Image 1 (cartoon, rainbow over the protein chains, first blue to last red):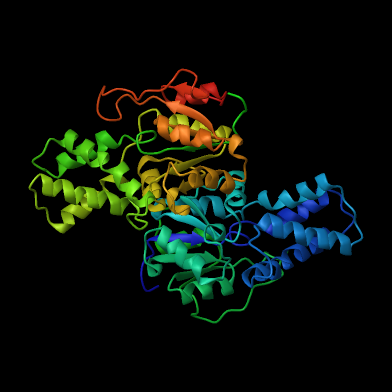
Image 2 (image 1 turned 180 degrees about the vertical axis):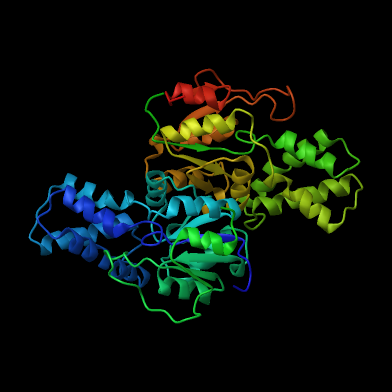
Length: 233
Length: 233
């Protein structure tokens, strides 16, 4: 790594929390007559196109609750399911109750003792707040696409995060499980740390492709990230 | 109180942290040949006029570090003091190292266990982050005038806070030591809790005026506020 970061910002869905396991569990809990894991994957798969529709101006600014609900309603229709409004609303809130990966609470505590830690997520502030309270995650600050009116990977998000942290982009490192997110951050001058989450899409579904040396750090979990930065155990 | 709040937002300078005691201490530490307590009061007294200049458009958006530095430079000139740049810069950062009032850490922990707690300050995000780390304050979110491009008491700040928390204004209560701040919040529909800080301007310098029944709750400290809301001890 060229410089030691002065603050760390974290992608959240997939990097910090296990959306696949948590959403599958909630789909089963509601007794939907679908394959819960496939349904969770399909719900998540609708997310990038929905955000892109906002990014291209085809949809007005819509927060993640609104995007998740649009996708859910379409998926239910595809599956010929007509759920009552209250069930749809509760199911949509599954995304506010995602569990962190097992290595996250202890690793994040060590990293926070070393440098300020903040989210940098496309999730809105209320969703990030609920996830933090649900998972016991002690962020120093919640930073979100919502604050900038743009979704990642728009440069406004990465640059805006550095500005709010009072730092040059080079002094901020993005921690994420997704190469595309890290590449966009690097293009804005941020440092990059890839966390490998082979179970993000379901157990053993594999890792995204990236080139050797492409990111400053590549680690299997938050504890190893803390080790690499020399954060106290 | 008409309704039970679903989230609490807190003014910070004077309400959460003791700016007067902390800044006086830093002025003494730098050995300035001035009356440290008067100097701290004069520095703080320049703050509202400086923000008003931004609010009226006479100054472009300037964060609190920038406003504090303008006021400091003018005060030093008035006192005939010519300090080196590094000393001025460090002295200006005194506002990032303010200690919380003694009742705050324990009271805030109880309140946080009960409902989400966030700052709602004219201080910028980086300053609020530094104060939280300095004082061990575990906010759920940092909300700041900086996010809205307007300073309190502009309505955009109070309404913006409710929006980011995903709540109606009536479901959010502002906790503050300053009647003007609370009156502006109430005009936007927020609940109000006045915390009495008789030492804000220096020991025993007294309380601001307010009418009986003007605010939903009036308490002497954060522990009593937690009691009043029925937060677990």
